[in-house]
Image: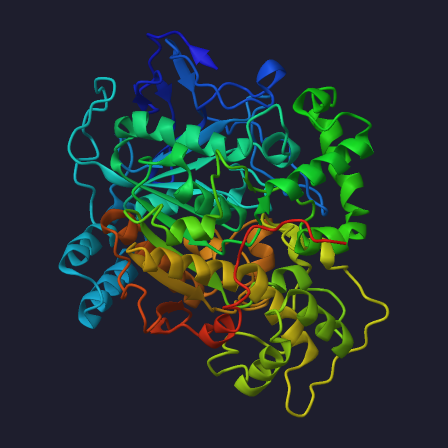
Length: 611
């Protein structure tokens, strides 16, 4: 809603960035601005076009509500979102900042200050942070912001008043077909109070954002993210942020998006640092993406072009995806691992927007000047198997043959069996599905979901072989490694080899009553949001240990955004990693031996197989 330009309310912060005046509201120790459009609604002639910038508005934009979620799809139904306005202006972003009048200073607002101070002291005592990071740790550990909270915000368009805070731009997950920045799990006030300006955004999903057409730009969802980052570069100073210290961070498909952004010419110069949380191996080459689009078109009875799909409404496209996933496994022989994506709509190496293999691009130095923090959870695939029947030995062996290291399946199985749950190769991998409800209640469901039925009537409870892992351990571990470990560590190694400063972590905490250190179990602690449907799956009974770990993770992320050093050694030949657990530590990466078995079968864009 646009108010007259001279409208005034003393109870809400008013900011005038170059985009136009916006009025937010004070909430949870921050100033909050929701549903700001960063591009025109992608409808009509703009539906499958690259995002178009929004002309400057003259009146005051009310930003008290989230923008409408984009069309989204999940095999379990879209996740719940916070109250939002209706409409088709899907391309919006949200900002939380402690920098504006009416917001409390970070030290006053956060209950984590004591814990954060301890975290900063620990980092200095261990000597893992450089002198530069040691200074920034004080700021990131809950110190007051550099400018007084009551300073005037009536700034000239684009002007800054001092260096500004680091900026964290969140890209949500959801298998590139689901998700929304309005999900309560991503409410950014607690993270902002740790010493950053936090931005979350929507982008086009599914057919709207990732179907591959000959007559439309490829990877439109990624181009939306670029447009949002351009908006941040031009406008974030007015909200107290430093446009020279922008860090993109995201989980699952959000992390996969960031992997693409690191290699995309269109994104060059838009961010200084990147945090990738569980980046999946979900990338297609153009040949496979073209065939996937043709299958969608045949099912819908339209031409496999943007013009053809324009005859379908977004709602009809959502229904089309539901019909598509029910039969997509019949393409397993030709599409290979891609049939485990439900549906296989994801980034495409099209030669222009994403120019080349993103792992090879990192190795070639495409992002050498960008500092990267990258990691995963230790039991990623448990998110997709929780609540399923136990795997039989035959089913586990079949899965190793399908997705395990090519030609080294027996070695892989032996390594898992010899390691044990608490030693190096098997650290964090339990004996079977954890307690709790099915995993699909939150964002991120979808990677691998097509291959995982909710029940397997033919499966018998697995019995561990005398010298081998249990079938459940093997079944989950090999899919964790193929989908996440290999993608993550191949990217980390490639970036490091090119001279890029790289830091690696694993999340190993197993929350009380949850589903283990599963995919997405790091989201609730990072944002500090332990309420709602998402945390009900991963953290149903949060305790003081979870809250301490939560503060520790936030300080590491903010410290990295501020200085480029999260507080532990960079990745090198010794493979150091920060293990986030109820007693965190810096150690050698626990999955190194498993990862090495994939050396001849690395992460790569997926293509068509010969039938």
